[in-house]
Length: 410
Image (cartoon, rainbow, N blue to C red; front, side):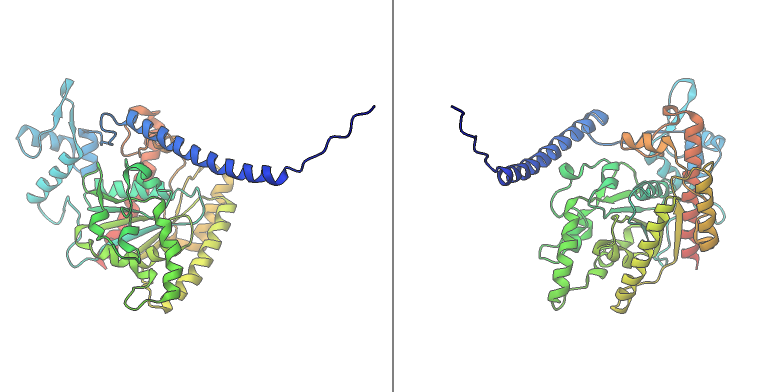
């Protein structure tokens, strides 16, 4: 006698629910595991306190950074003037970054003529707020912001770096792990939020291992500003400032403490980016010279212009000292890239920076250990590769420094 047919049970709904739950748990578990491993990685990289420190600089590097001859530094040492360098075998001298700033102060005190070694702004010169922006991922926004901030600090400026990206790459690059080291209301959100308990800007600023470079870190809580701003616009509470003025008001609280603020904007055109653009005195748009990237930048510019026009009518500040396009991850031997750069120069003229940031393994390899070109040593790379990348980065940043000086001189 044949056995009766087996009854089929529809489990699609149950499986679907189980899968959704499992996926949710899986993502959470992966996030926790990754965070723990990243923390362990930092402990290995920067023992014993898992804090980043800045390397020492050779006398040759120090002379180039300050802009004097190495022989002059040697003479100062022999005469017992200025900070005393650390001397190792064969008489090799090295300086900490604190020593470099002390040297700048010493040289300024005995300086002759108009040259100044601490190029800080005068009281009547306005704070420079430079927004690094684009909503195309991979345009090297964070790389640009980090290297520019550190370059200016090395040059003697008082610099504040602001991480407005919830992904917080700029924060991680400067030694803070967002989920471990940045607590509630310790990002700029804590100083610009609409609810009660707003913190002063000074309270959310953290010191870095770079003397002269401070940081307002970022993490995922910055997204709260994107969620709260539409509600605040709808409610229109009396006495509450508009979203576009909040970053500007926050930075105004500490403007006397800094010469330049570098803002790493999120890769989206939301309320955070718009508020940052309204606080800016200058805008730097990073672009990778590929057709899809330039097409994306075109959409970014169209959307930005339309939104900023609305903000301007509502009273937002749209006055900029300068706006420039920076070509990043450039490969000069790549024919199509060369054509795209030429296309941009023909269209935008001087608004495209003369110098481009070259694509280099030195930059990407340094980032593996959460470092920039200014932190790693030449010996860690093929020297020609390192020299080429550093020269390109210095030329880009020096060109931006000229724009800053011109803004103060006008």
